[in-house]
Image (cartoon, rainbow, N blue to C red; front, side, top):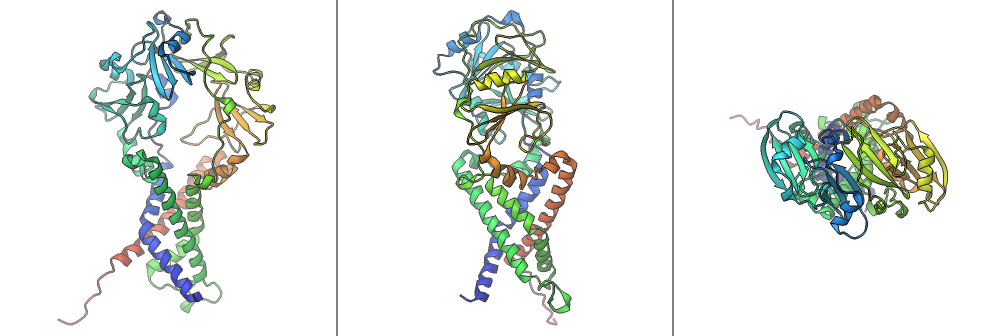
Length: 480
């Protein structure tokens, strides 16, 4: 095949890939602009605690160990907490991949029939809105994510102010709330961007393959366009009329020039978006070490707990080999190793001893992190609490743990294997670069400017695709 024929074939490949995928790429860019400012519907910890009444010690008769025994499940619980979510104090226990509820007064295992539906509005809505409807749903557009699997099915309570509240029939707790604005903007943002159509997203392998291969094809489209655009560019020996582009029609000329201006950033966005799915194991994040498992030993928790006066929830968690108890109110959190007094936070010595007994690798350095580093940093829709304990391990993977002193939880695990994910996805796709983490307004300005450039480029491509599929009718100049 001659050079001319090869170029012609590449032009045809770029053209027809653009016809097929141009609109999808445009929608990715437009939805990315929405997602910059609108997070997907979620219930944060502050909102969740605000729906809970204060715990009364008088209503507690059962210990955590007895509540676990009542379930008669193998193994150990992953999470256990105590609150009065549906008007009665109960232990909410995550075990065997599902949530369970055990009455803290009687020790009875609760079923959906034990929860009074008339309390759902008061449980989930501290305001004045009234219930307009209630349905039972297993899965819908806003609960399609896997993190909701242990809580299914839900009561979806529809309020007269257009909010929807999702309450787990298994634990009796509020799991999610959405507003009409959130739902509308997310249809234009996250749903389009991730192709999160409910029937498709339920089939995870099919959904992943569609996103993976469509983004790879779009990546080829952008790479071809950028290469061909450079091939047709003439800066020194210009085309007739002093033009640097061979195209005379406006849409083609602008598509060529916009592709030269924004093609690189579009290529990096498509590449990093493709890598976000970790194809062939590329750019995958680190796995949680097995020795940091979260199963909670409750054999010693045989005493009925006494909450602090302001507590709305008690939670038991494991840090290393030690059990901690967290007393949560709407404003503060106090934590204690179960054999020590409550404190506002764990100390470095406590964290080091608890982790050191469980880790297979020795701790080489532990310190407070008071501001973001290159791995642990906040974003608009992903807040981070500081200070956090940064724990470096002496292992082949160069593991670093970030541990919250308020909860004892390992908030993040990083090691040498997640460098590609950190820079090729978070850095290239979301522009989570150190300078932009320090200056979030600058990040917004840069992302918006680059998105607008990409939108202009893809709009010109879509216009050309439309004209290719539906060419304008020639004007008949024959005299009548």
